[in-house]
Length: 302
Length: 315
Image (cartoon, rainbow over all chains, first blue to last red; front, side):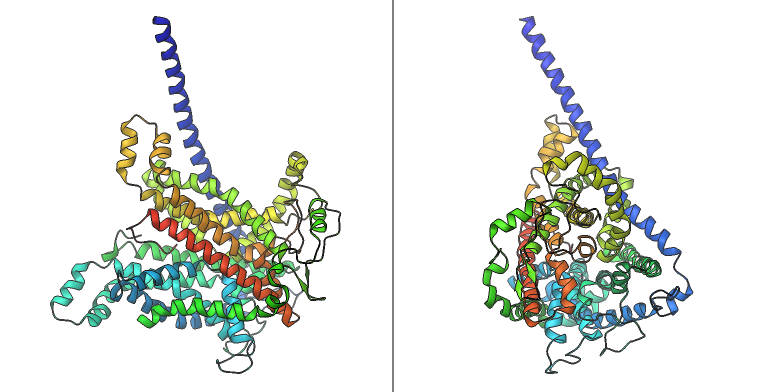
């Protein structure tokens, strides 16, 4: 009898040890995968700062790119061009997106239409940006009948439209999320005072959620600022100063792409500088979003 | 407000209409054989697939007006599947670490770091890949792979540039990691604590608790997160264009040059030489559109099924 009991006890001990070993192995694997994820990010950032910082000088922000083979020059026209494109995109994307978000959160909450819109917006967020560029090309750049303004040729307007329709679903969803976080007490207080629903929404709810809505817009802005693919065949890029909506225009990510693939070291240097500028902009926007979303009425949201 | 919300449907309808109208020419001329081997004999394709020295059939021929999107479909699938194979274990490991094992102090900064990874534009990933990753692959990783795994036939030394499917897969993996990881974390947090406590009460170790109590319950959501990552990988343009080598060929070797659907549109759309060429590229765009919509819809449904009740994040 004692022999059997000993055997069972030994088996249990082995099993216990295996379970402990598996537990430690799993913890080790999880830590390893975390390190493997963080390592490329740190590598990219460090390399970017190292390569980009050496090429950022005043000339970078004020001069046009020099002809190939000459050293010096800057990407000032690309920065201006990105500003123009993002301005057009924001004019299209932000009002429509905020309007859609207000509808989803306030007037259509719980209806099937609102669920369908929310689902479609999420799906649209996942569509590749190059498809948006193809659609903008087919809609604005290709037709020669001049129904749509600035149509028939490559233009900053078409690039701005492509970027704008990318912003709409993102802004819509983040606006809805921020509005849903406004406590009901605020709305009910306004309604109890006899304020009509539309007025309460506009003046009270939206105003309360406005820091969140603004940061949502900034997030969409930062995301769209880095998009290159839709611009390749709508805004096309430009080597000279241009702020006109009617002509091709330079854009920062587009120039980075073109310079990275060119065979000249000086253009590579410019590309790294541009990449650093872009990434600083995006890190600022993301950090600001995190900071603002954690204060005030909307605390504890993110 | 209602109009603004309906504009989302309008945008989808607009894109779909433009893409369908633009691809009419090739649709009438080639039909479904545009996405398969068409008139090229299958045996030629298979021969060229295995033997790096055999002549490749001319799939994509703007000069003669003969277009077949098979190499691009192959390239997209290979780079996406490679990316998934590399990214999914790492992403799930990261998610498990962040939700279950991480000391509270580290959780905030690590989550922030992952969010930053997701926010970096793809052209910057491409820039880094061209100047850092590709030389690394070329000098160290590829020779090692050829030496150790060359016998499988998937790694041969016909392409010494370091560009190719493997490099594209690596950079894609880095790009889809944060999406899969953050969605997995969300899905794991939605598992009620009672499940974890019940398994612990039965005497489980921490890993057993995670495996039985959390991962098993969150299975469907994790599958949804992976599918969402796949959707992102399928449509990724800039980083892949800069790294994949841009050759419309089908090779068995993972180190060979190739092209993906998005990369051929990015490279050739601005300079397409004929209406048929334009139409062929637009049809590839339509295929991308349809596939990513289906994949994203499926993924969102799966994630929603697990986190039902909690508001979804605009990932």
